Length: 109
Image (cartoon, rainbow, N blue to C red; front, top):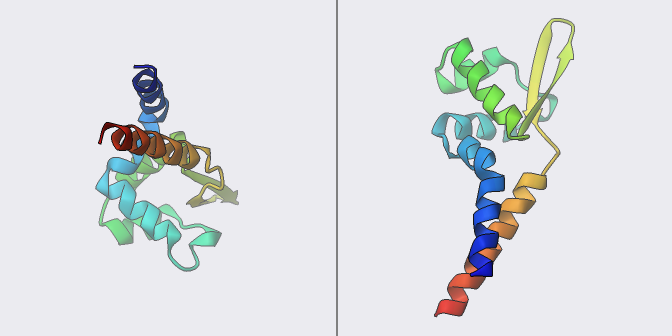
């Protein structure tokens, strides 16, 4: 039971992150940011072309991704460039969670 309590806590800690990566539009944004030249960042206009969404919709999704620590931005004058964050602590936590789930499943077999 202790393992299951730990899993419950790990899921709770990753809830915002899992919601952020679970949406198809946000997945498309993440993939666009992973593509060539995205290291320099993409502007909202670039992302509207990739996703066929409006600027307000892209801004909303970027806000969710920023809150989940997946995306960051830099400002150049009046322009914002969005890029994938180098903070991978949530990704490491997800990896650990999946390992714990696998371990529990392996023990039950």
